[in-house]
Image (cartoon, rainbow, N blue to C red; front, side, top):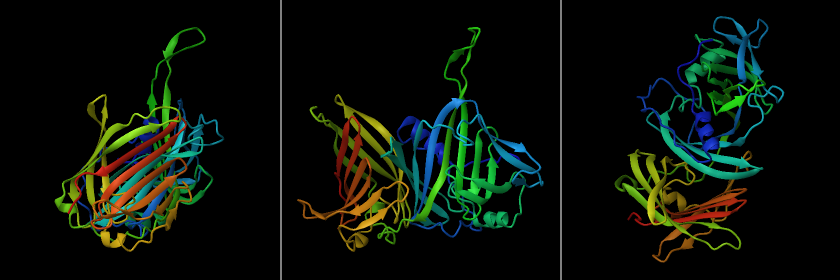
Length: 417
């Protein structure tokens, strides 16, 4: 089997998230002209959600290898057979071994337009069974493959008919949590890992990535110093594929979106610890419009924190908003006005995160805002939308940590008219 030239980005993104403990936006290649003859699987539509479990670990050189085996379950395009061996694993055949950091990558399809699919990815970390919101990013990609998140329909149908091209291999596979894949496509990436797709749905099922690092030196029995070579290993595997069914997902962008180049939010961020005085710091969020399509928008979001009187950027992230977005920069106001406050909209069966409609609040300027609340075991995001314009008018984010509670509260300074 020969390495494929490209690989998906699921574990690439999650490795950065879990190792650095904050969202690092990935650099996308320029969006190529879409091939109208290539289409995604039928389940790819606005409102679809994929949830991946993710884990990272640093360990002595090990990992997975493909071994020739005439009785092996994996068959390549030349008729050769293979099996996977988990070399150096101490977890009874697991690809990853004991993990140092785990979490979830939540991928939402928020819009489809002109051969492009718009994906919003949330990162959740899990610490001692506590789910924390780490960050989010979003962008548009080629609809046929979703930046490697699924196989295009023609390729999927060919593989299901057992018609393999050079470099492809298929066979059964057992996912890390014990879920079997009766038929899977295996793609090797030279020495960096492999990706596995479920041939029943075409969705990426597993992405395993490893990168050799040399953190320092170690002394052998004779006292001689040698490189202490270890690997950083990241694994993502699919836990759930389902519709999210947000009630505003059929809406369209409000008229003001295309003529509003920047949305500016200002507020405070503070750490609340019992018995310790609060020292709120100023924080600012600028959302600069990069692209306005008929059904979706792309923003470049920059967060600035003011420390010791010095304003400095804290993060730069691409953010996508579409009809099926949760916590985007706008919602069609006609859809907002039809919502029933107090309704529980969703409870994710994997992450446990809920989405709830709060009670409308009358503002001093006469406008009414409707809160949409996303809540996990140890975080709470409140997105308040103007029912008149549909703009995201205010944001409150709460993170419950062992050392205290971090609260960020921001409000829009330039509301559209």
